[in-house]
Image (cartoon, helix red, strand yellow):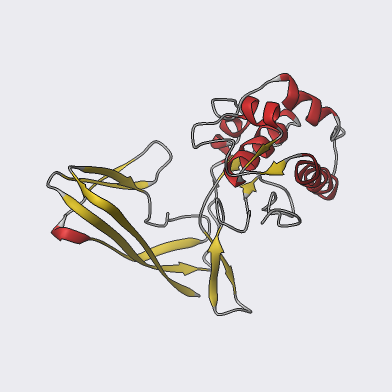
Length: 233
């Protein structure tokens, strides 16, 4: 199957700003059953981005605009071929990194307390791990309030635990921290969900107004957890 993905971000400012410096990671990665066959990146004002590859293998495009401007648009167009053979070495070397802590995902007492309420037994099946993580998702949904006014993009897990409130990003960070304390590798991702029954791509996976958050973790028979809409606007 070939998927065509168009991603557009527009910035509009109330007055001229002097400079924009930006990095974007919009080119789909090759591997694990998919291949990017075409990628184009268009930035307004005739900007030509430069490119490098980061430590995780992502293609990073970067640019700056140093004259006054009141708006900016960044549009990527990708064609991705899916259904290919999976990699022989599907990034297992990164699993240990998905168990480590670094801000904003911190190892603090509140994280360990939540993990102790959702213990996973030694040798548990994939279904058992899935069930424990779904119960963790429900616990966060019940015990933490969605409130846009109490945190910011720099807020870490310990602050969210103290406030018992936050937004999608905060709950994703909290889920990841507790999952790692439970011994389950987890990471924060953003992207798109393709539903072949629908018209194509459906929604961004983090920080959306609906309160949808996604954290992923490798399991024998599952690939996603942390999406929740029960009570958050």
